[in-house]
Image (cartoon, rainbow, N blue to C red; front, top):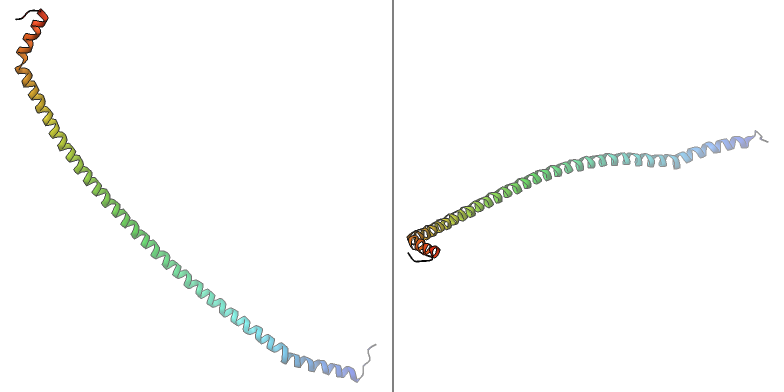
Length: 141
């Protein structure tokens, strides 16, 4: 059973003293450490947020520069292709003109050969006609 004598009062005083001692020696320092850790974590969260913002800004800058460089490279490539196409077209037209002039000269040469053959055949036509008539008639004319 519980008796209410002086030991109960000593135990109560002992508990109160122990509470104050533990509070001063153990609980307050632990609370202080927990509070400091919490403040430090909040500070780190703010720094992390700032770093993320800076990283995003730099990434956007890099993306913009890459897009600009890509556009510049595309324009340079298109320009080079257009120059190559123009040079190819120019060379092709020169080759066509050369082929056309060669064709015209060969046609003129062939026409002159045909005309020469025609004049030589015209000059010999009377002789051929006489020979054919003699072969057909079987006697000389």
